[in-house]
Amino acid sequence: MSVKFEIAELMNKEGQMYDWASKVTYNRSLTTEETEISSVVDAWAKEIGTKGSDPNLEIAGYITKIIAPEVYDKPDALLDAMFERGSIGEFDDYVLNETPKNTLVAYDAAKGGNVDKSYIDNAVFTPTWKHKQVETSVPYAALRQNGFKSIANLTMFAEETLHNSMIADVFSILDTAISGGTQVFGITGSTLDQTSIDKLSLYVIDRVMSGDEPFTFSLSKYAQQIAKISGYTAFMSDSMKEDYNKYGLVNFYGGMKIAGISEAKRAADNSLLVPDKVIFGVAGKIGTLDMRGEIRVLETMDNNKEKVDLKITGFEFGTAISRPEKVGKITFTA
Image (cartoon, rainbow, N blue to C red; front, side, top):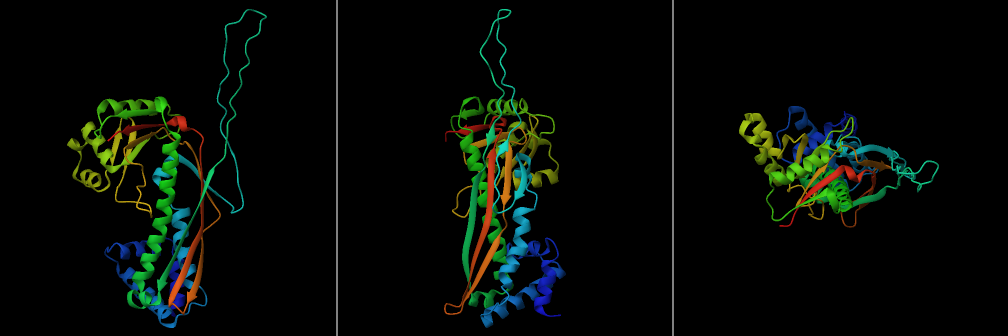
C-alpha cells in the first residue's frame, strides 16, 4: 500500500487524525494504531520536504479534511447552550425575525373614549459577520527534520486559532451588548460575595423559559470562587474534585450550571477568550451563531525559498444577539 493511499484512507476515518494530532502536539500517549499513523505521516511529510513537490496539493487537502469538521460540526457545549447554531452558503445572508413581544398597553379610559395606540414589537436583527484567515509557511527543512510532528502541530494550531478567535469575538460582542442597567451587578474589588451571585442567579432564573438551560460562565478563577461560596468542595467525591481542579467547573449554583474557562486558553493575539473581571449569567438561548461558506486552504510550493506557503481562509461566522435581556453579568472593579 502506498503512503499516499494510506494517508487518504486515514483522513476518511472521522475524528481519528484530529485526535492523533492532538496527542502528538500535547505529548500524550499514543495507541499502537496511532504510532503507525505517525510513521505513515512521517514518511509523507519527509517526502514532500525532500522533493519540494506536492503536485496534488495534499497538505492543503489534509488540513481542510481534518479541521473543517472540528470548527463547523463538532459540538461546543457553551456556544450550543447560548445560540441556535446553523450554516448557510458562502454568498447567502439573512435577518432574524425575533418572536414578537407583547408591548400592548392597557389604559384607563372612559366608555366610548380613546387612548394612545400601542404596538406589538416585531424586532428584526441582522447578524454581525466576521471572516477569519490564517497565513503561514512550513520550511522544507522542518518537514524533513520533524516529519509527522510538523503536520500534527500545523493541524492543531490552525484549528485552535480559528476556534479561539471565534469564541473571543462572540464573547466580546456579548460583553458590549450588556452594558448597564438592571442587568449588571457591580462589585468593588476582585472578590465575589454571596449577595452578588444570588442577585445574578435570581435575574437569570426569572428569565428562563420552557426548554432553557440556565448557566453562568467566566474565567476559572471566578468559577472557583463560586464553588467556595456554595460549599461545593466540601462534599465532592475524589473524581469530582479531580474535574474541579482540572477544569474549574462546578455543577450548580442557584439553579445555574457553572462553567469556568481557563485563563491559559487565549486568542492568537494573546488576549483572553472571556473578558476578565466579568461573570456572565445566561437564561438559555439568546440568539443565533451561524457559519457561512466553508474553509478553503490554498497551497503554494516555493522552491526558491524552500518552503510551503499556506493560506487558510473562508472561516466566516455571524452572530445575532436577539434576546440580550436574558443575560446578566457581575463586574469587578479590580
